[in-house]
Image 1 (cartoon, rainbow, N blue to C red):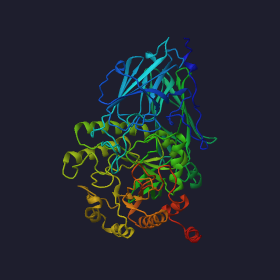
Image 2: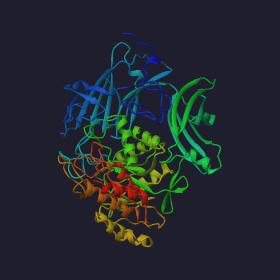
Image 3: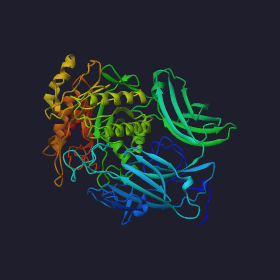
Image 4: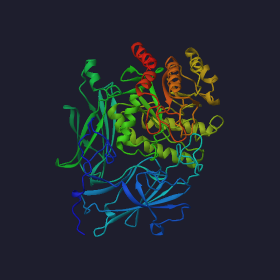
Amino acid sequence: MNRRHLSQIGVANSVAPESSTDRGDRHAYPRPQLRRRHWISLNGPWDFALDPTAAWQKPEDVTWAHTIEVPFAPETERSGVNDRSHFKACWYRRTFEPDVTPGEEERLILHFGAVDHRATVWVNGTLAATHVGGYTPFEIDVTDLLSLTELDEIVVRAFDDPADLCKPRGKQDWQLEPHSIWYPRTTGIWQTVWLERVPAVRIAELVWTATLERWEIGLELRVAGDPTRRLKVGVRLRVDDIVLANDQYLVVAGEAHRRIALSDPGIDDFRNELLWSPESPKLIEADIVLLDEAGLTLDTVASYTALRSLVAQGDRFVLNGRPYPLRLVLDQGYWPGTGLTAPDDDALRRDVELARAMGFNGVRKHQKIEDPRYLYWADRLGLLVWGEMPSAYRFTRHSVEALTREWMEALRRDASHPCLVAWVPFNESWGVPNLVDSPRERDYVQALYHLTRTLDPTRPVVGNDGWESVATDVIGIHDYDANPAKIARRYASYDDLPRLLKRERPGGRQLVLLHQVDRDQPVVLSEFGGIALARETQTTWGYSVARDADDLRRLYRALLEAVRGVELFAGFCYTQFADTYQEANGLLYADRTPKFPLGEIALATRGATAAEEHKAKERDKAP
């Protein structure tokens, strides 16, 4: 067959920045902060085989018996496999014809958004790469492995022992049937697989930071290819039609580290127009060009950043220099029929819109490193996100190494998103079950807190959310008491915070360990509520149960009114966004249908004005 030049690979999307009016689709560019023009999605039908005992080690061993729809995990209905049994491995195969001829100036990169848990990849029968970590991406330069005369073949082996409690697994159940707060497993490919044409010398990584005090944007750029070449990078920053900066910088040893000073508008009205917040999610579009010493263009990418700061200052969160109460909702990130994978990009956008419509200004993504496309929509539409590491459930040398490695990859992937405002490496002492009595486990939590702060000093770190804090910027409390009056009384003693945190034990757990509590440290009720209301065909599981929609409305209003009235709290996070499998404690059913009207949820969430409250009461009286 004839092979055309690499530059003729099909275009699946444009490098042009996506606007706030764009709707999502199944083939949206998977890496929104470093976009190029030429790429191909490999989502769709792949050959598939289950390997229950992980007996097969090489592609030639495999008996291909099924077809699977990538990127949906084989445990899901949408995959076409729908097998929730215990199996240790599974295999994928597909061919592709990108019509490429490898050349010295261009390369073909194979990207995997996420494969759970250990991925081994062969291209045309040659072992190409391995990657460990079920929530983070990896890429392979496959140029030198391409065939010049035949279709190219990709084979992926995913190894994922369902009984392994040492790996980061989040809410994936180790029992055969989901129980309590644990859900069906996710094995294998569960995010987009894609091919991208790139220059041999190219922009490989961007990291953006903002500094409001100096009114500047920080850029860290890394170049792949020949690090000895004399290169320059051109950076053009713009908001709408206004150019904020248009400069060139030297690339030294394959890297550029620059602070891009912007003209300070001076007057607050003008400054505020450029600041990112949930109420005004203003993004700064970036066009970046890599140039050789003669000024010829080697690579062009599109990106975006924003001017915003969120810090834990005193006992409050401060967004862009102003106190900002957090109204978060806990979001597990599962969908009916597709599990951890969104049905399409539009579903990710819709979840961001729904959180905002319910009156929340942020989400705590719980036990999941979410698809970058969700973060894109949170950036674009305006929603704060707490990023959380999926937990392991044993404390061993292997679990420490595995979780630390994957957490570092997650920080690296997501650090430039303006929507992300906090990191949560541990939740409720999962993975450190003897934290109270084990110095090693306390050292581990403290070490990961400090590592996170070292890699990203711009965001607060919630060291161990829920209880048993040993190192943290924020005291997170999980308290599912269903009595609003008790919640209000329990946390009313602002002037006695150290004794309060030592004395109160929601869930039977001490809130602070070996930690001198700073009275000026923010306290967040980071899990509460969990009021269940199920459809007739659902299993009803929650921390408390409502009889019907009217009862849920009443209970939610009362609980939110009590929590908002606690001066001690710098914010809250209600459990939860949507029903998830056997958990029926969402404000939305699993299909995202509201359990009572979105507008009424929003009034209760943010607190109604007197006029809004009167209108709501009149609606309640209406027949």
